Image (cartoon, rainbow, N blue to C red; front, side):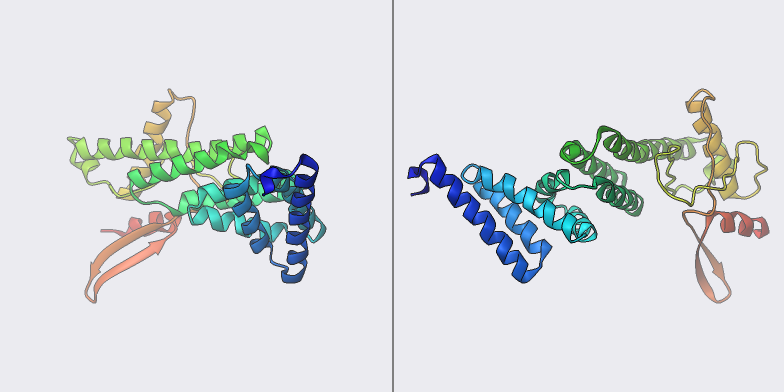
Length: 277
C-alpha cells in the first residue's frame, strides 16, 4: 500500500514515523532503545524509508547535543564494538557525523581502541584478526571523524601490527640462535612499540634507553637485544625509549613453600633479577 502513495504522502508517512519514534523516546528516555530502532530501520527498511533514516539520524544527534548524552552514546558505541557487532556500529557513525562536538566521541573512541589493542595480547593469529577488524571500522569512520583523526587511529593500529611482526621476528632469532646465552632469554613476551605523539596518554613521560645499558639478568638482556635489533632494522634512524613503569612482567619461581607467581612492573622485574643468584 505504501508503494502506491505519491511522493508527498510518502514524505508525510515518513515524517509521522520519525515524530512517533521521538515521542516514544521522550517517554522512555532510553538512548540505547532509540539507537536500536534507528539501526533496525537502516538495516531492514532503508530502501523504503530512506528519508526517515536521514531525518531520524539528525534528530537523535540533536537529542544527544541538547541533553549532553555524549557519554551515553560512547558507551553504546564501545559496547557494540566489544560485542563484535561491526555492522550495527557503522550505522551509528551517521549519528556521530551530525554531532556538534565530534572530538568528545573521537577521544573516547581512541582511548578504547588503545585499551582493546593492549588487552587482547593473545595468539598472533587472533591479534591479526583483531587488527583487521579494527582497520575495517576505521575505514568506515569517514562519515564522522576528520582525516587527521582517522590517521591517528590508523597509526595506533599500525603500531600494534608492526609490534606483532617484530615480536615474531625476535622470537625466531632467540629460538634459532646457536648461542646458549641467547637461547636462555625469555621467549614468551609481547612488547608494543608506540609512535611519538600518537598514543594519547600521560604515562609516557619518563623514558629509558637500554641500547648500551649494562645487562646482567635475562630480562635486561632481552630488552637490550630488542633495542639493538630494532635500531638495526631501521638502519640506526630510530631507537626505542622504554617506559619501564608501564606494562607488566610475570615471574614464576620455586620456593620452599611451593611455586610463587609474581606480577610486577618491568622496572621492578629489572631490580629483582639483580638478586637472582
